[in-house]
Length: 124
Image (cartoon, rainbow, N blue to C red; front, side):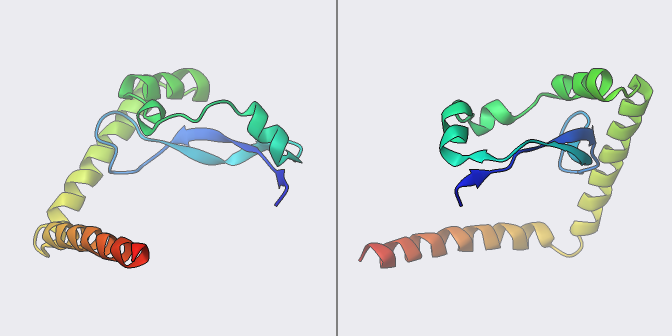
């Protein structure tokens, strides 16, 4: 592992129901591939890492990207937003009878407890 290959993918309208507000974005299948470079050169050029907060795009930014960079119409964007809301509502309805939210919460807590146990074992 001494070289880095970089691909820049296209941006497309997504369909992920966990997007709380505005249109979801995702990467497309098309991409530009750049010549592989030495990892040391890559690390020296890539700049500072961004925090997760800096990586999150507002719904306004996502709309702007879809409209101006991707070329979608406002009507297409709003239609996709409605579809995501419908899918999210359907997902919430289908998970309630099975108690999946409670199970998910319990598993999350169990995972945190197990992490603490493993860290304690590794430290000893």
